[in-house]
Structure formats: structure tokens, C-alpha cells
Length: 326
Ligand code: HEM
Ligand SMILES: *[C@@H]1O[C@H](CO)[C@@H](O)[C@H](O)[C@H]1NC(C)=O
Ligand SMILES: *[C@@H]1O[C@H](CO)[C@@H](O)[C@H](O)[C@H]1NC(C)=O
Image 1 (spheres, rainbow, N blue to C red):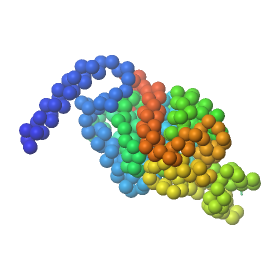
Image 2 (spheres, protein in one colour):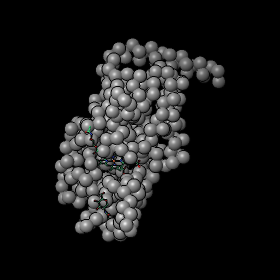
Image 3 (cartoon, rainbow, N blue to C red):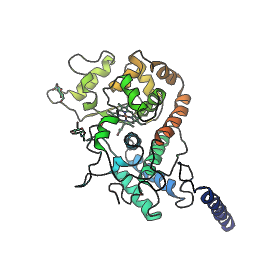
Image 4 (cartoon, rainbow, N blue to C red):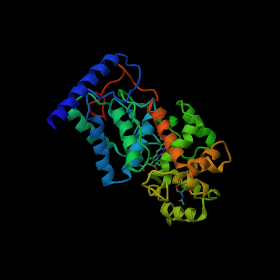
């Protein structure tokens, strides 16, 4: 036993020497970035996510969404985590985020553990990328190796958060445009929308489909139940929440796409992927018949999204507290 342990440490040491030797170029992300300076990083993050998801299954969805809203605004730099201060306006109050993003406390507690284990080493942006992967894994989805070495921004951009994150009322060309703006394709858009196989949405984000002349693509029984949830009597219940996947709301699977075929997408931006007769319909249909292909493509698109404009080398910093620049 003792010799097995020391063999492991010698192996790690040799690997570290090799890795450090070739790590002089800070030009890109790599999966083994913390191998030597914080080998327990991924285990600490996994157990933090696991604990949070065990307490509240929806947290997996909330953490996955945080990574998306981070990456679409000036790249994956943890700008989404910065609080408002007298000298900095964060992104938390931007239209797509306010009263909506969740999971900040989970990230805080993971960061605190990492600062205890290896101070000043693991970036908040990397925590978001790993937590997103772990959230998908823990809800039954695919698993992938996360590219690491992102650094954290010292600033945020609320105006950009307002405009660069797609809105749930968008049509297909608009959705494609917002993804293209950050270097992602139409196929990435359809594939990553499959994240809506978990989590919830507030009535405020799909109310418009229920009122006056309700959206004809919305299945009738679902329409009635959403009207009851959201427009209950005289109160206008914009903060009530509905499951984005009404069949398996806490399981990562391809039911999201099946729902679209039966008119049971919750957001306008979900249903149009199938119902607008456009360029995305075929891929939706394909994923309903092939969960394996959805999983494979989801991994690839998540890695692509995680690669959007990272801060590398000496750019940015490693925040000590994800809510504030150092
Ligand atoms: C295609 C464009 C997208 C639009 C228009 C969109 C819009 C939305 C909206 C409006 C909500 C509900 C928010 C609320 O009610 O507070 C939501 C939730 C969610 N979104 Fe998206 N989204 C898109 C793409 C994505 C992507 C790419 C991901 C991740 C890869 C993602 C992951 C999620 C998750 C997991 C939830 C549930 C969060 C929770 O329960 O806390 N979405 N999205
Ligand atoms: C962002 O959107 C919010 C809500 O619509 C608006 O109040 C705010 O002025 C916008 N902020 C910026 C900086 O564009
Ligand atoms: C609910 O609120 C929305 C937006 O605030 C408004 O447009 C709509 O007319 C209201 N509907 C009802 C039934 O009160």
C-alpha cells in the first residue's frame, strides 16, 4: 500500500516535470492545467456540485446556465459572477440575468474550498466550466474532459450582457445570429438548446405565448396548464416557474427535442427550432431519434462554447473571491 502510494507520487512528479517543461507557452487551454499546482481541483468542484444538486436537483440546470451566460459576454472569464460595487457595474442586473440567474452561493462555497486547498490557483471561470460539465454528468448526460487555464476578468459589461445573450422571444435567424457573434454555428445553437432538457423558466419569459391570441404552435393542454400557472385569475404571476422539459425535468436526455415535435416547447425560442419550418427542423428531428448523437454533439459544442475568448497567460487574474476583482 505504502509503495503503491509512493509510486503514484513519483509518477505525478515525473508527469509534472514533463508538463511544466512544455507549459511555457500560455497560448491555449489544456485539460491537465491543474495537474501539478492543484491536483485535487476537479474533485473538490465535483463534490461541491454533487452536494448542491443532491440538496436541490434544479441546481444542476442553474450551474449549467451560469457557464453559458458567462461565455457569451466577452468570453468565459467569470464576468457574470462579479457583484455590483460603487466602482463596478456587474452583469447580474442585466435583462437576461436579473431575478433569474442562480447558483452564485454554490460557486462561492466551492471557491472557498479551493482557496483553502490551493490559494490563488484555480480561476472562477474554470470553476464554472467544470461545474457545468459535472451538472450534465450528474443529471444523466454525457461527460467530457474540460479544457482549463482560463483566467478571470477584472471587469464586467452589462450593456453587452443585455444584447449578446439571446432572448426567449427570438426567431431562428436571430438565434443563429447571436451564436454566430461568438463563433458558434447554427448546429451548435440547436445542440446547446438541448440544455433545456433540465431546469425551469419563469412565466415572464413565455407569457406572451399565452395571452390574447395564444401561440398556435403551443399544444392545447399545455397551453391551458401554463395559462393557469401564469395568468391565474387576476394576478399576473410572472415569477411562477414551469419545467423546461415537462417529461423529465431533472434528467439530461433528448426528451427536450421530442417535446418540440408535440408542440410542448416552453419558450418561443425552443418551439421555433421545430415549428418555423426553417433550417433547424431536421436536426431537431434527428436528435429525437438519436440521443447518442445529441450527447456526442453536445460535448463538442460545450467545449467550443467553453473556448470562447478565454483570458490566458498574464491577462486578467485569478480572483480570490469570485464576486470581486482582487
Ligand atoms: C438558444 C438560446 C437560448 C435562449 C433564448 C435561452 C433562454 C432561457 C430562458 C429565458 C430561461 C429561463 C430563465 C428564467 O425564467 O429565469 C432559460 C433557462 C435555462 N437555460 Fe437557456 N436559453 C438559451 C440557450 C441556452 C444554452 C446554450 C444553455 C446551456 C448550454 C442554456 C441553459 C439553460 C438552463 C439549464 C436553464 C434552466 C436554469 C434554471 O433552472 O435555473 N440555455 N434559458
Ligand atoms: C440593460 O437592460 C436593462 C433592463 O432592460 C436596462 O434597464 C438597462 O438600462 C440596460 N443597461 C445597459 C447598460 O444597457
Ligand atoms: C401581464 O403582464 C404583462 C407584462 O407585464 C402584460 O403585458 C399583460 O397584459 C398582463 N396580463 C394580464 C392578464 O394581466
